[in-house]
Amino acid sequence: MKDLLGGQVDDIKERLNQAQFAERVGCTPPYINKLKEKGVIKVGPDGKIDLEEGLLAIEEYTKLARSEKLKKAQKERVAKSSQDDEPEEDGCFLSVAESERRRKHFNAKVAELEYLEKKGELVPAEKVRRDAFAMARRTRDAMLLIPTRLMALLAVEDDAQRVRELLDAEIRKALEGLTIEGEDDAGTA
Image (tube, rainbow, N blue to C red; front, side, top):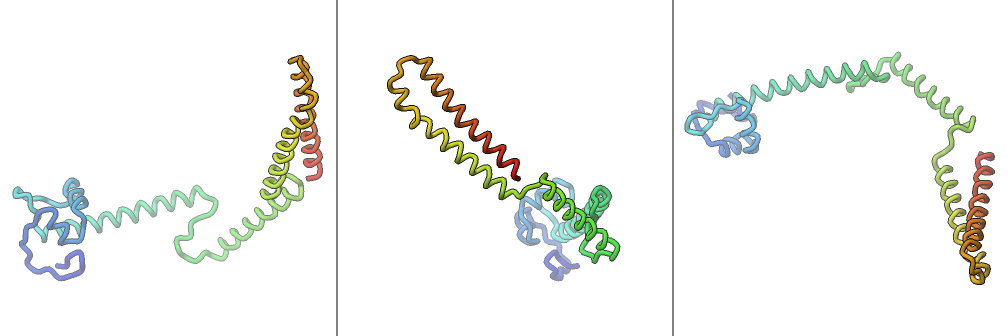
């Protein structure tokens, strides 16, 4: 019989506690405890594990777990490939027909993007970022100029309603200028 590490084990009748067994087989004590709770490893009335029986149980459990994982992965792959429009490769070479289908699909997507860009429905993200930044800067500058333009008028004004009207008019003027600029930019895009 071979142990988990590939070494030869002959006539082992050794009984170990869980920590010793874990160390001997190269596992962590929590993993051995998990296997004990699942009923994979049997612990005797003395609280110890027979080394030979434990090794055989772990080997069988590992084989079973691997085969179940493989079956589950295969079922998931089949389910996924039936849902996706692009099947998984599984590390194998694609057939000529599948390769050609993917090439045509890719070329169609590229052609669609080029069409949308020429039509004006799709613009480069970097251009959008630059334009948005420029618009925000113009908005900030226009708003920050309001106090400079109004300070002399507001300093002599003692009517609160008149101060409000002056401020409102200047703010509207600044924002309407931005709206007109934004419409001009949208028209040229």
